[in-house]
Image 1 (cartoon, helix red, strand yellow):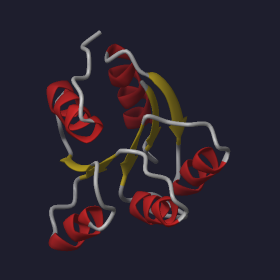
Image 2 (cartoon, one colour; image 1 turned 90 degrees about the vertical axis):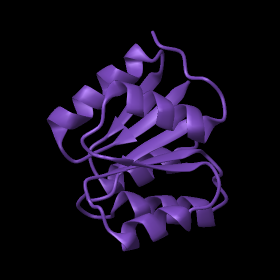
Image 3 (tube, rainbow, N blue to C red; image 1 turned 45 degrees about the vertical axis):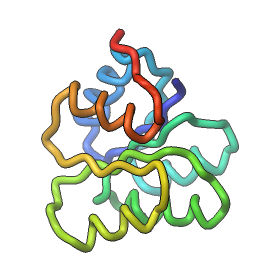
Image 4 (cartoon, rainbow, N blue to C red; image 1 turned 120 degrees about the horizontal axis):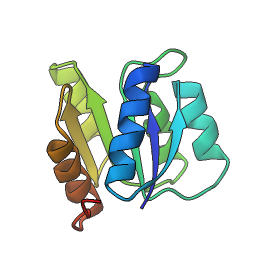
Length: 125
């Protein structure tokens, strides 16, 4: 599994990268919405994008809405600490193969979210 993970908190981003590597993923990291957009634009295919909502420049949701408009059907896990209807509605608007994952979460919850959006069991490294 090739995963692109984006979060503006460097410590959390490193933690996510290690967690995804534990789940046998090849991980590419982005520290902002702009970096996320740049990684997606480079054309390297990703099996899944895991992004925080609140990031400087562009939010993860804004980037993924742009990616969907451009025709990128990649599965997405949206991470957020925001428990509001607006965020949930924006995630739903991304379409199929999208999972909203509320922070804080466990490695097990991440694995379940990945399995749900990928439509297959995610191995535990």
